[in-house]
Amino acid sequence: MFLSYTKTMIITILFFLFCVGLCNGANHKTPLQGRKGQWQLLLNNTGVVGMHTALTYKNTVIMFDQTGGGQSRYKLRKRFNGTSCRTNNNNDLTDSTCYAHSVEYDINANRIRPLRLETDPWCSSGSFLSNGTLLQTGGYHQGAKRVRFYRPCGNNQHCDWIQSKKSLSDERWYASSQILPEHDRVVLVGGRRVFTYEFVPKSSPNEKSFELPFLHQTNDRNSDGNNLYPFTHLSSDGNLFVFANRDSILLNLRHNRVIKTFPQIPGNGSRNYPSSGSSVLLPLDHKDRFQKAEVMVCGGSSTGALNAAKSKRFISGLRSCGRMVITGNKHTWEMEYMPKPRLLHDMLILPTGNILIINGAKHGCAGYDNARNSSLEPYLYTPKKKLGKRFTVLKKTMIARMYHSSATLLPDGRVLVAGSNPHGRYTFQNVAYPTELRLQAFVPHYMEKRYHTWRPSNLTIEKHAVGYGKEFNVTFLLDRRPSDEVRFSVYSPPFTTHAFAMNQRMLNLRCRRMVRSKEGRVEAVVEAPPSSVVAPSGYYLLTVVNGGIPSMSQWIQFAHA
Image (cartoon, rainbow, N blue to C red):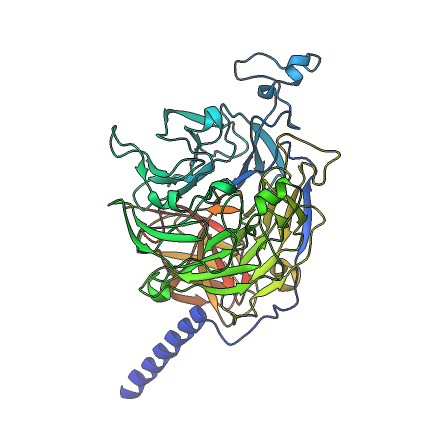
């Protein structure tokens, strides 16, 4: 009986170790070096400039520009009032309401359909609510105080923009938007000549905006502010990190109080619009209970770039990047350098946890015709490598993506790249950088066929709506035993515009246990984030990453019980 008991215990221990080994990975490695990725041309004409982009949980991408930009390349049959738009009428040819300035791109079908905008969303902001609705705020002129909603329904139906009857307290032109831990509450920060923040929705009918002296302090009057589109990140403690120009604070929104003032990022120049560097919150991890929050800021324009560009002198941008942990008590910028100067670029978190730096220019600043020397080569930044070894230059594109370009990560692992228009109107000839309507995808190297045996496939999530702290089941197929690391990440797709991906967020989740059958079927139990403080409620892309090779992602929703 003792021998039988001992045998049973040994089998149990070995089974446990096998499960742990699968969660943490067996001792196999994949060859990931020397891969630069590929580019795909998806469409020759999106009709409108991809100035603003957002991926919806229906696997479509919303793209829009400005209604005052003149004739787009997507003509409508009817205006808002229902009257027809005629091709032989001169007034109709110049009437912006006869042209779409927003489209929905169906990823799977590779086609677009027009959407109707009532007011101008030029240089606006956005956040996704818990049910997948895009809350879109601000813009230009009559659109500066407007609130718009887009509830995705899939491209086979006819959902469209809905404009709220309620207005914002202040004009939000070049403002940033951040979703908060409270259910479907958003904070809007800054704007041109606006030094306040406000909430949507309001907590009471009489609630107005709140003064933020920090925005006065960082305002550079000689450079159109240099603190527009401030970088905002929700810290893991529920407070709001705000970076503007070269300075940053931690703001307690409940008490309207600055609780930390961080060191100024070293070096000259500026990081925010119109200097237009970019920023990202590095992935949060279950290993420290999602407590460590680290921000990265890269690129921007040199001091005096705006005034120089007005005189047709284009100063080299910034190469420097800074990383700083914003939680805890020690705050120091760790500085490093990109291969070349860069501004007007996007920073996206890939499923691997690495950062893709894409689009942009090397000289000048943001604004109409204010930049030169396009950045055609994306950079891959690997946060866990040693300092000085973190940047890799990837395959270049032949299409310049300058001012008013954007990028967004797709569920299949590709990166959608759209837009570029350094002009007040659609301009296709006799300029250095014409209006760009071609749609591309950058395909990371790990999506190549040679990695298919490493790639988790047929990913299935048992429950698509999961409560905080709850366990949920994930199954997938794997041709071989897991590699040295299997990770389960969730990613909150951002609203991307003007070199900043608002609300972008990745979390590496805890795998409780995992078992692989002989047929290659893997069953895992994964733990949801503990609260909306570290993961605001809404739709996330869940990805299984096996030794650096990610699966195609599936949607999961985290919600309050």
